[in-house]
Amino acid sequence: MLRRAGFEVEIAGTGAAAAEAAKLRRPDLALLDYELPDMDGLEVLELFKGGADRPQFPVLILTGARYSSGDQVVGIERGAADYLVKGLDNQVLLAHIKAKLREANARPTRLRRGRLMLDASSGQAWLDDHRLDLDRKPFLVLYHLALEEGTTLSRDELLRRVWDSGYEKFERSVDQAVYSLRQAIGEPGWVETVHGFGYRFVSHR
Image (cartoon, rainbow, N blue to C red):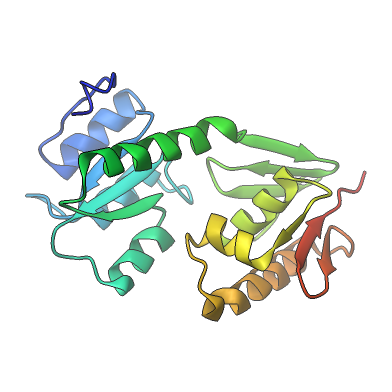
């Protein structure tokens, strides 16, 4: 189906083979089965990350059994770009793939805003020459805010981009992530609160 859609496809039968193939030639995107002969999908995801915060390419996990909301949350928290249940329509799967490729191609890997440098491939940020101690979610919130400097992003929008969720019960997670990134930066004014709506990034020279 993917080849008919114009994609070049490489298949690996085991997690180890997939990790080795990704090292030799980084893919634009990976479809990762959760259940493999030698390891599970989350273990392969860690190999793809290679010690970084997330893989340098989007990884879509496919599963036929591990599809509870808890499994999905864990997969996305561990760095998957999407978590899909087997059996979905081919055109829907293709739409997910194209959307993730568009996102990956549209966003710069390295982003400089004033004295702040963000590296999306490694999930690391620096203020001047000091590397900031940021977990994945606070980093991604900072990245998306910095990406649209001067624009106010609502909590709902940040939830959709960072948590792949729009559930109101997760709104507190956005506030906690902003608190963490502010603590890591250690200077006021980089991320402004727009009361009753969301947050806005302002760079400092």
